[in-house]
Image (tube, rainbow, N blue to C red; front, side, top):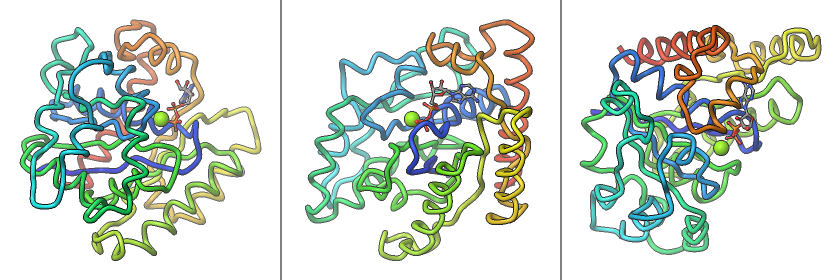
Length: 267
Ligand SMILES: Nc1ncnc2c1ncn2[C@@H]1O[C@H](COP(=O)(O)OP(=O)(O)O)[C@@H](O)[C@H]1O
Ligand SMILES: [Mg+2]
């Protein structure tokens, strides 16, 4: 059975997609199979994983078809990652998104809408070690649907006031509403701090504050520094490793350690 993990924060630019994509790469390098579900109409994860989301079945159609009483509607939407390296092709699959995923949001009030992602993935993702659900910067219907169908949540937070506040609101939201989201056992698995600038003292202050407010066990180590290679790889739709530089290797190593933490939490 897979571990289905929501990656969220209602703050945009907090590194949700960077975490989903680079954690998937690191898990693959550790010989773990991963399904990345792009649940953001911006479809950044889809593009960064080298998948052409423009054609074929996407998460949008899968959710539309996932009416009460159905299961596995996402089966047709699963694609192999678009990165060319064999190791990633072997271990990473993607369910792509397109901008028209927006159309699912207005259907939130239809019967059973909250269960659409859970039903759509039933029997589809159980063979993967991990299913990572990349969420939009919102606590609205799409994120709620992800929370309804997942085992646990990860928050990504920048060491900036508004991002930390977004992370705290995310935790508050999921703990307060788990039962109403039809998923009483849902919990916060961890907080990944990204875009850290070590020379900025305000960042050190925010990181210390996060260890206090989330608790030291929840804040995962190491933190992810602000590095141009992360953006370069993302913009080029390439894995960090194929940049080949020592800076890229250093950042890959950080995501490997985070992947190890993830693996250990479930073993
Ligand atoms: N640690 C980092 N260092 C440098 N750039 C980063 C880092 N994390 C994310 N980025 C870049 O910042 C932008 C926003 O990050 P992204 O992962 O898309 O955030 P979100 O999905 O939360 O909106 C993207 O252009 C991404 O490539
Ligand atoms: Mg994103």
